[in-house]
Image (tube, rainbow, N blue to C red; front, side, top):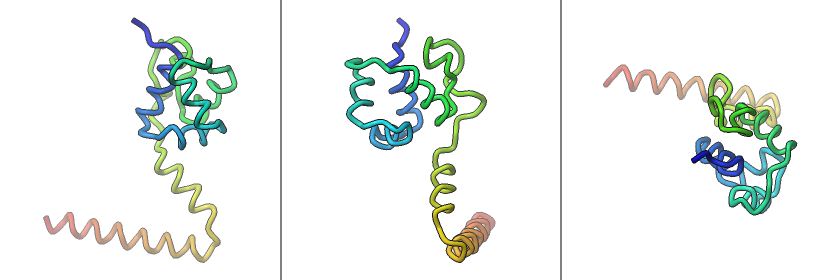
Length: 116
C-alpha cells in the first residue's frame, strides 16, 4: 500500500529527526497545521509541498507520488545549516572567536584520536 502525501511529509520530518515545531517553523507553518497534515485531517497544498522540497532538498515528485528517492542528491545537513544561520547572526569579533575555538576543538579531537 502506498503512503499518502501526508504520511510522506511525516516521514521526511522523522527522517530529518526534527520535531513538528522545528519542521513547521522551517516551512513557515504553525505546528498545529503541520500536525493536522500529518494525521490526514488537512491536505497539504502546493505551496507547502514546494516549501518542504526547497527547504529540505526533498524530491518533489517523491513527495507528491512516492516515486523516486526521498531526497534530491544528498540529504541536507540540517545541523550545518543551523550552525551557519547562528554564525551569521554574530558580530564579526564573535565570529572570529567562534572560528578560533572551533579550530582548537578540532585539534584537540585529532590529538585525542591519535592517542587512541
